[in-house]
Amino acid sequence: MACYLGIDAGGTRTRALVAGASGKILGRGIAGPANPLKVGFAACERQILRAANQAVAAVYDRRVSPRLNPSLKKEEAALVHRRYSPQSAVIDRRYSISNLGTVVVGLAGVDRPPVHRRLLRWLTKAIPARRHLLTSDAAIALAAAIGKRPGIVIIAGTGSIGYAEDGRGRAYRAGGWGTLYDDAGSGFDLGRKAIVAALRDYDGRGDRTVLGRKICRALKIHDITEVILKALTPQETAALFPLVLGAAREHDAVAKRLCLEAGRELAELALALATRLGWRRREFIVVMAGGVFGASARIRRSFSLALHSATPRARIVLLRRPAVEGALALAVQS
Image 1 (cartoon, one colour):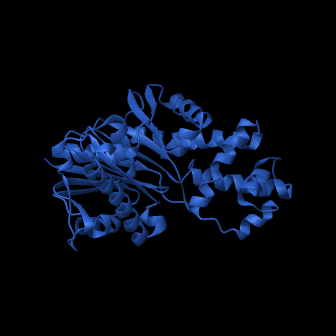
Image 2 (image 1 turned 45 degrees about the horizontal axis):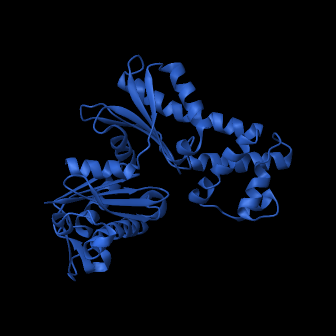
Image 3 (image 1 turned 180 degrees about the horizontal axis):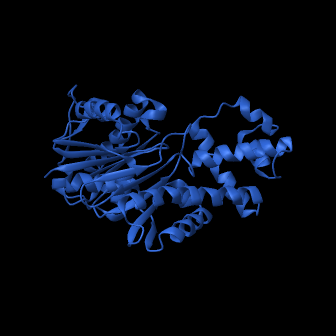
């Protein structure tokens, strides 16, 4: 009996799942951010292996300690064995899955051929398996929500992107061009705009807002002008987006406007894809995924209103399963 490994290598964290042929989850792992375009290839590879290590270790621990999972079948436990081969890339070269069928890794940036070639070459050497599939983080999010059916997914996490599959083997994307040129409606975008709004308030060029005070408290600085000394990374900037949501709940007009704009900008991604697919007059599924959608009913509402005004038959759903489950499902179904 084969087993399968699914990995979601995201911009904020990396998750891994190991399952048997039935799809039953046997082990889980978690590690840090692994977007190769933001953290580099070495860090990306390190985080993927770290998450895989933990997932495989969890299976091994269950095998040697039945009390951790009394229901684990003997044949499932037998999937994992201990060895000290230098060829093994998991669990510090000590533990390995004996018959790994398929590994599916979803991560941002792999639609760029040089990125795909480099990471796939590394993956086939790092984690021995019968088959390796490297796909986008958006593809596994869509799979987690609706399987292999046609549809659109809009991801709003650290960054943002729109992705669609037409059900005939063709995939499309919109947005996701990075923090410098795009990522509209993302956590980074909200965090950056919050800083801009706070600085404009400080100068007297913009509307009054509580965002400056909230940012100072979060970053432990005395006044908002010190933010330029912080040289925040995209991840650190994105971590400020909950401050916008909190300020909006306190009826801060600037924060409410930022949330409204974020929802509308994310809806533009879905509308662009629906237009390219010829779906604007038909019923189709749109999946909202990522931490921004998950954290803000206000942004979800803005997104839905904007999209339905142009495509009234769109069926909008919130992704309630981790995207890594989509990676695992693709691995099991391959």
